[in-house]
Length: 289
Ligand code: PAF
Image (cartoon, rainbow, N blue to C red; front, side, top):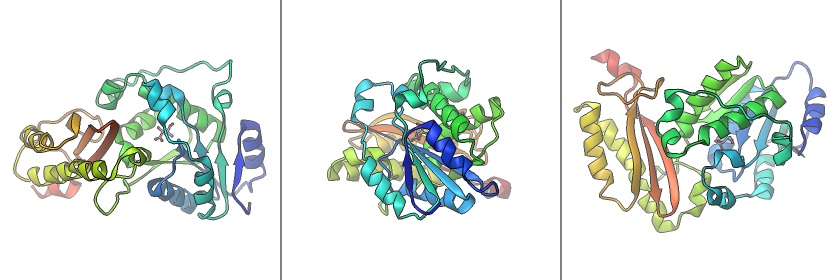
């Protein structure tokens, strides 16, 4: 495979993957397009792991709990293709339309995600994770990748996808990449395009609050730390939806520090909903105690 190709149907994608040298493995990077440098890091990781990289670009309507959010989601396919071209050969773009992913005979799955699906994004965006589970399972069934690459910015999404992969016993290894941030600390997101310069500055309070929490974690328990951090956050112009300090595996809110404890934040900056998360306690710090 020498050049980037763009395919719109499952049939063409399968044909292309069948031509693939049996020895070269396939990695999938699922996206909704509007690619930014954070996505490109995921693609670079995938390129380092596999002989063929499928980047799917599909704005999945069933994971949006507000119709206008789906309609306003940025769509920049031509630009996406041109940035991917620069990442070298062996990349296949899979840009299906709705009926390719959800044909008439498609039966939506409704997986019981338990606590993982009930908190944070699950609580504030009802139905969102069922939409994610459906589309990611469809993509995994179509592409059958050895590796699937996701960004840690959507921390809860990764927990849900790992649960789904395990539940259906799917043969793919989930690879995660760190959140890509601007020098200012703002996590890259396709939604940042909707922020004015002033809002981009205001949004830095999210990163600042998580750094404050890292500092607070050395002196206070999670409940006290969270209270102080919320007071700090609420002095900003953003509207906080949740600030949770969670166990990294169960996503339960904690009242004692555990290795890998994370803070997760969702907030509105003007009309734009932003999410972010950060590890607060590394493994070493707990074992030092
Ligand atoms: O993280 C995203 O962009 C989406 O939720 C995903 C995983 C591509 C599914 O539509």
